[in-house]
Image 1 (spheres, rainbow, N blue to C red):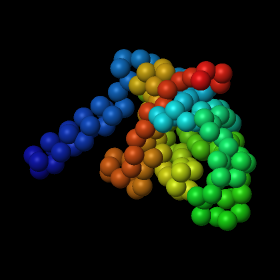
Image 2 (cartoon, helix red, strand yellow):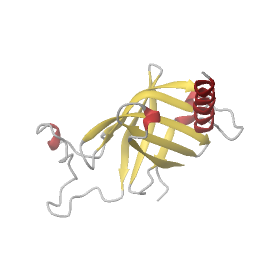
Image 3 (cartoon, rainbow, N blue to C red):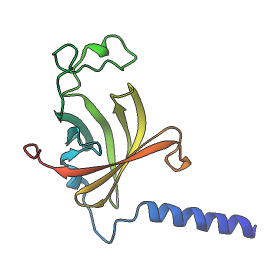
Length: 157
């Protein structure tokens, strides 16, 4: 029984450290605006519709496919019909809900580089820094990838 108690304390501590916000207080709409992905090759605009948060690609460093000379397509998507849609304008983030303490949960993220959709959570630890965690199963299981997005504006290169 003593081991279970210590295990629960450890899990609670890990959860609290994962959601720590460096003493800052955030509001749900602090996530709104433009974000530059970690690779610095795409900008995503985060918007809110009916209390849920979505993100769409609004800028690409290289929007044109070098081989075809046409806009890049979502050619990694497993659905042949969706392979015809352009990457520009793709909705990457879908249906996130604000949980408080700089945490948005219960949404999904689409990765156009592999055509897969993952469960996702987003954590803001600073007003201009967003941690995006796409995962399979449960967020705490470790089966996923975390990337950092930085706040930007549409005109900034």
